[in-house]
Amino acid sequence: MKNYDRNWLMLMMACFFVLPTISLHAAENGKGNSNSNKFEVATSVSKLVFDTSNAPDLNKWTKEKFAPAIKEWVVKLTDVMASDGWKPPKKINFQFVVVKLKSADGAPAWALPSENQVCLRVDWFRENLDGEALGSTIHELTHVLQNYWTEGCDEKNCPEWASEGYADYIRWVLFEPESKGCDFVLREPEKYHYNDSYRVTAHFFGFVESRFPGTMKKLNAALRDHSFDDGKFWKKTTGKTAKELEADWRAANKEAAAKSKAKAE
Image (cartoon, rainbow, N blue to C red; front, side, top):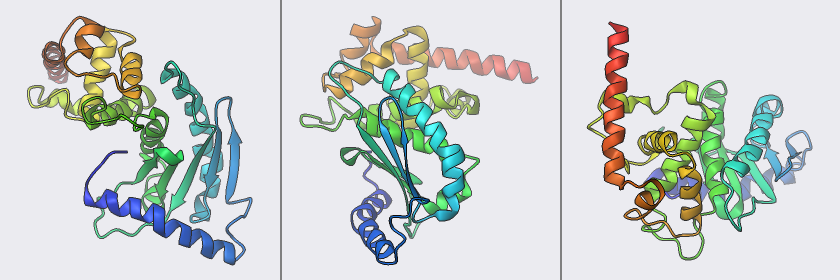
C-alpha cells in the first residue's frame, strides 16, 4: 500500500522490527507455533495462512467467520483481477499484530505486497468484528493481488489515486455495495474529482464500469503492466476522456441526489 503519512511509516516499522521480536518471544515460551493459533486454509488458487498468536481471543471468530469469507473472496478476486501473465500468490499470510500508536488514526490493516502479507491491528479488530473488519481486509488483500509495484512502476503509470481507488472499488462497490460507503459523493457532486483517490475514485470507477462494462478489468491490467496513461487510457477504452467521464459522473450524481431528495420529501 503506497501511503506516506507518519502513522503508516510507524506501522511498517512495526511489521519489520516489532513482529519478529513478538514472534521470537512467543516461540521461547512455547506459544509461537500453536496449531490452534496458526492454521492454513486451502483454496483453488492460493493457500491462506492465518496467525492469531497475538490475539488468541480472536481465534474462534477468525476460523468461523473471517477465514471463510477471505477464502471465498480470494477466489473471486483472482478471477476479477486476472490479466495476461499474472498468477496469484501461492501463499498469502494474514497476521494479527500488536501496534501501539500515539494517534488513534493509524491504519487498521495494511498490506506488504512484496511479502504477500496482510497485517491486522489487534486493538482495532477487536472493536470492529461486526463492522469494518472484513471490508478493510478485502481492501488490503486487493493490494496484495494487484502486484503493481514491480520494476518500472512510477507515479505516472501506476498513480496512487488509481491503485487506492481500485482497492476501494473492490471493497465498496463489489464486496459490500449494501453499505453504500461511497454514496457521500452524492451530497456534493461538484466537490469531488475522479482522481481524489479511495472512496471517491471508487465511486467514479463504479460509474464508469456500469456504463462501459469491462473497463475495470482493463484498468487493473494496465496498472499491473505499467502501460496506464491517464491521458490516453479512458479515451481508448471508453471513447471518452477522463474529464468527459467525470462530467457524466457528476451529472449522474446530481440526478441521483435530486431523486433521493424528492423521495425523502
